[in-house]
Image (cartoon, rainbow, N blue to C red; front, side):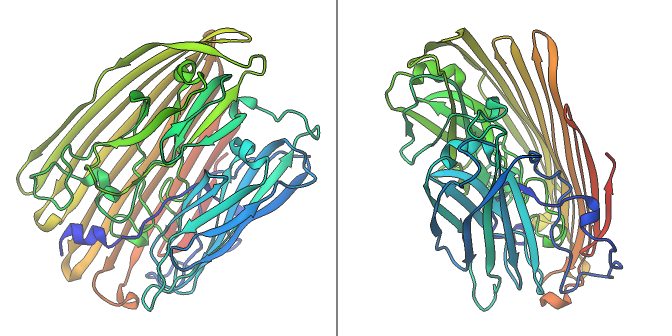
Length: 539
């Protein structure tokens, strides 16, 4: 059986947003069951080693149900949202929570939630056991307070197929919990992270910003999905090489945003592996891979362009994925603009003063043989700068971002075995006035799938999501953050037999380490054959 045939079996993938609610280690299980010899008809509910979403203490909270639906097909849920009563009109925090359950047989499915046209949540679903699973996903959505401050239409969709074979109906409830400020209508804490306005980028790609905008970010929920080759974009090879997924420029992808046709931001997409990914759902039944149930948006600082955008006219803002085959579906890029306004001026003027595009250097070299080998290296650097004349003086912002990609892809006859060792980097430096924020992101993937004797398919895979951020003012560090979220898995099952004859075995591990100015989180989870065997906290 060809490896691409194997890979395509994970069709029906999805997207995600939020943090899989796990709670403290002791909350998962006081006593863990004995490890079974192989996967059965039931296994532990999905869990994550990520920390819970922080919540303010000692303040009033209010809960609103945003959506309650069962998804059987591609009919969206439509409803309405009304702000809560009793928690003021400004909030110190807003936390979204999805509670879901599904049983039977089902693929992972794509989901999104929009409020007032603003995409606030993107999620994929875990794959169920025959006896059923429940799961929860949480996300801090405080940055959408502008949208949530008034009644809005709601739309949610988790596209699904239910028939005689795929029986899993996806049942979800989504709530928002609002935490009041200590003064009923006082300013919310940390205004630097909560914009005054949130504007969704419409289908026509045009936007008109408030004329007194003094800070502007764009967030793009960029994901390759859909069960086709762009779901595995990192495995594609140049046209002409003997592999089932090809792209003219090979596997390098870059998420780009332009303002009036001029390149304004570049970013490396995260190589998300969904809960059926790498041909082997047994890797992910209990511990999803990094971001599989938490699609984080790519964020760009567009403040250098604010002086151009503040003229009161519509401007075109467009998002594209460089390297994706022309005309091929598979990438989704819903985009929001987050704006901070100058309360002291009706109009803030300024200009773009620097735009240096180093251009994309991208090389993919195919070496025929047994196995075939593809070596890819890519790099791109962009610097933009501009100033704004605000009520508190002239403020200059410069943004430098560089992305890099190195990978080695090896595959044999019929794409068996099929292996990839890849690293992506996304480094960014933003200087506004005397404050500089440096962020260094690194994503890695190292895996191999083989089909052996007796049609036993084995996948061994490790993934890592790492980032370090430092904020300095006048050369003195204000805050810092260090993230290392690492997943490893090894699973084997028999292809082409009924579900109860697969004789599947598998282990997985996630260690999520976060050290920052506020403290430390370090938690490790391990599983075997669907049983949770370790839940260890070190901080």
